[in-house]
Picture 1 (cartoon, rainbow, N blue to C red):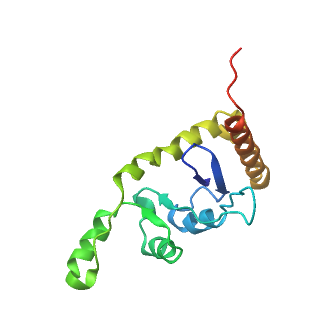
Picture 2: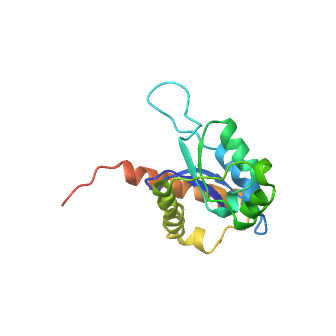
Picture 3: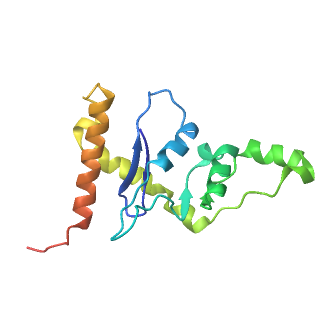
Length: 154
């Protein structure tokens, strides 16, 4: 399960792959699945910034974010930094990221915990990928609806 979330722990996009699929190649398909509807007009598909861990620090992902003018909040892997330094001037500038935005990266972990609070998702009862993805979407809709409901005190 690969997903994108907003800062309020609400899911924006799901991509389901086999268990041994790496995270980095799924970065762009997850971003392409983001569609946030506003009051009028087309749905918004481009976030202001994307925070991720070092697994998403590939040149392909950074180039994709740069071409779409999205701020990348992804730290550089040690081996990538060493290769860049080894190339000297031709290695390019060091990668910078916003430490304040990077702290909010735990939103994904908190969202996964909210999704797994539903036993069917946590234990993977649904063996068919279509039904498991449908359960993810259903649970995501429930999370969205609960966050939009005003808090009431009894």
